[in-house]
Image (cartoon, rainbow, N blue to C red):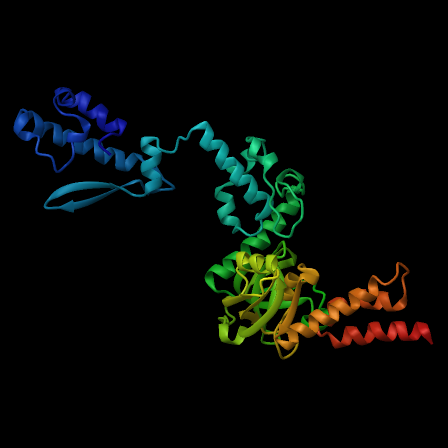
Length: 392
């Protein structure tokens, strides 16, 4: 605070000799400088500087709040900055170099491109100017970086930025719904929403949810929530939650993680490169690896899987999707339910690729895939009947 311009002006006005006698580093409250200067003049200076500090407190406010806080210690007034932000603004630490500015813009572009809907809207609102400035090309690194979480060749430049490619009204509606979802998550509040789900026959389109956490999975931002209608936990694509309304009078259901997920032992036979990839991705825990020395290894451990929302047993959809991208370089030995689903997909895939012609069997495989994985018996029955009727 002693370096702030109002204090320096007060020194120049009331005791200019002090700046010549003592450096600002020595002008710390704990430094005894009174032995070195005129006592009466110094006491007069302290009274005047005290008035200046009071003026600084009353005049320097952000949103009606004082930037300086006064406390009394041993009958002496001591002033503190109310926040690091207020201090940095006053003494100019918020100024950054051009290089650092470009680096910040590159990171903001990355956030806006890949994680715009993952960050709470009120946090993004504080960064609105930064995000808008980040729409310009600042750094040559942008052409030399690739973000490939699923092996897809996507770049920041080729992604649709939410700030540029939707109407203002549409953005406002999306942001309002997102803000209500994030606020409900933050404050543990139940909310209602409309949700156009693939499983309408299970959940319907009107849902009441107790939000638990936000997850980024398979290029989508998902909300894990407790569904009050059927007392199950399910993930919802957050951008598809519409007409969000808080229900503060409804009892919030806090997740019991033991109800939500269970640990299962796994055992895979894989190529060595798959083992390295699994370990690098953080797959499972308590893992152990044994190598055959021929390019093939066994990896064992445990993996936590959520309970399925539609039937007894684990929800293995995302796990199987992840393991499937290793193709024929991985064989699941256990657990049996995981091996059975990998086998089902492999069998269906073999039929799909046996010929190029479209057959009823191929059509049924593709159209019933999601229902098979969700164990949606009703949809499976309808799909099967459709092709049986065609063959009659």
